[in-house]
Amino acid sequence: MAYEIVVGLIVLVIIMFVIVRAIWKSVEEDNGEDYVSIYVGGKRYDPDRPRRPEWRPNRVRPPGSWRQITGSIEVSGVFYRKQDARAFITAAKVAERADKPFGVNPRRAPDNPHDSNAIELWGFVGGKKWLIGFVPAITAKDVSETFPLEMPLAAELYKVVQKEPYLDIYFILLGPGAHDPFWKNRDDPLSKKKRNPPI
Image 1 (spheres, helix red, strand yellow):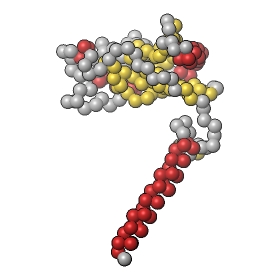
Image 2: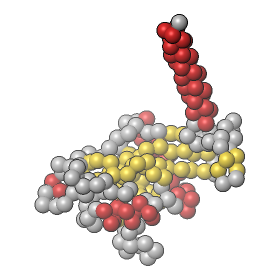
Image 3: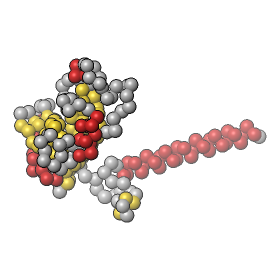
Image 4: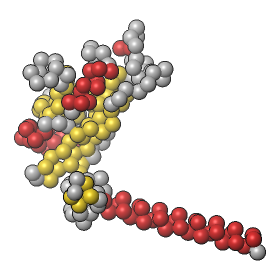
């Protein structure tokens, strides 16, 4: 009798787990990445609202030894550079289909009058370049406080979410790999002996 009760309870738990997982998966699929069906700041986002078209390019890192130093981050200031940003994205999509080089390059801008930690983000396709925005100020500040100023930076174009009048570009910031010659005779903040930087 006790054996039958235990088996029945185990079966019941398994069934409940399968049901909860199925419900959770359907909620994730409905909500997607761009909209959530919860109250945020007093406003309810509709899960049935059409999602903005998203383009995820083939993730190609620049040549060399690089490692990820941030997660996926939205480019800051695209709103003020929409014309150049749109031109870059259009050219990048064509380049991807033609298997030609394209991507984004971060460039430190210590002479920026608003922020000495500023890092510009340039989109490139072949030899053509567009200033599409900046690394967000808080991330740029973390990078300058954590890594040496002379450390080279690179970036990986992660995804683009576009539906007029919106254009959101996401990237991943990269730094020299652990065995890169840059770290010879230098202290590596990302070494296993040290705590990861707050980026």
